[in-house]
Length: 102
Image (cartoon, rainbow, N blue to C red; front, side):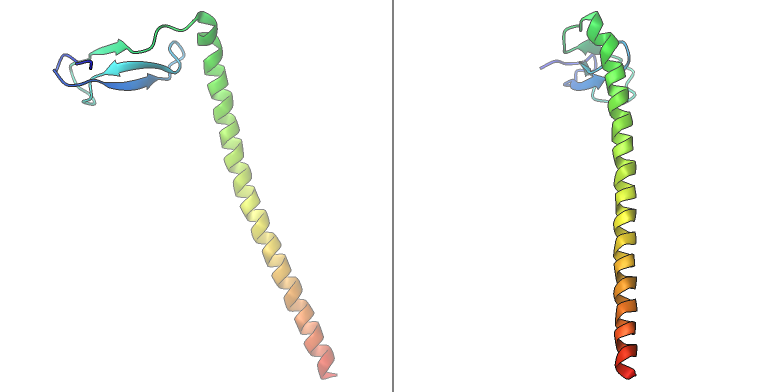
């Protein structure tokens, strides 16, 4: 176990900065604590990983946003399809009922 300056058991957080993308570190469990204690849990990454990972994360986030937008469009399309079938069936029933009356 690792303890901070407050004497509490540290928690492990993940850094998402461009300098330390995905690197985990120990931190004081109290948010906004004046303890300010941090220490790295993971060893440093190679320079190439530090250069590549932020771009990959941004691309992944863009893809996730696009997927959510497409899911919304798919829901709308399914709703329009169901409404069009409902309208089609209603018109056909009206046509059949009208032809039976003649």
